[in-house]
Length: 271
Image 1 (cartoon, one colour):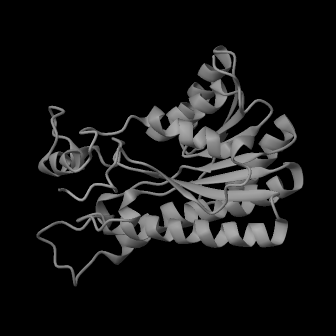
Image 2 (cartoon, rainbow, N blue to C red):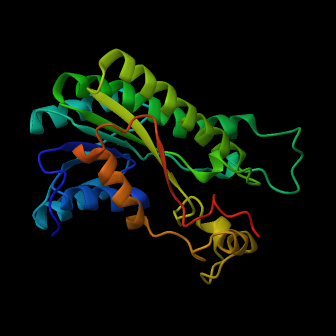
């Protein structure tokens, strides 16, 4: 393995049972971190923790809903009992739902408010609440802790259909900057917050929007690929370099920043 830049770090990953969460937890463990894999799917969390442990890493499964404060506090207690501290938090829980998507034929003055709120709750408050619970513990136990949120290029570009997700990720950008400033002014470099801005990566939530049943790209998928200079979707492990860096001591003076990992999508004018 490469040098273990996260050796001695204890990191909680929310959404650890998802597609991106799988790549994150494996990479963190390979970099030497003790990892808490947090998600609602106990079976998957346990399987992933066991796989990491068998490979010589260190991981524990944490069953929790990111919108349930009691769940999160129990998860935090498990981490402290097991490792004695928490150095890092990756807020990777999130995603989209069908009710948060606006179809081309839908009346934009008759939006599904319940569906939009659900997506906003999951992505925004599903980031804010874990930060409230784990962040406070990090201030007490970590020496230079780091919180990494997951944003999206939808916060920077107007994309059709995904209104709920766009609202939520735009809010994540604002929250990241606001909270980073407050952390710095109140606690100096004791705890910091940044975000990663993924381009287009295939997940369970967006797969039907971007791919047909035979695996070929939909018209929307083709449009995205044509506007990505690399000409393809990203692979989950291609986010891990930025993630590990933001959690490591190599980025101790980085605060309130969003690191874009999108194959050039935001840079491309289309010309």
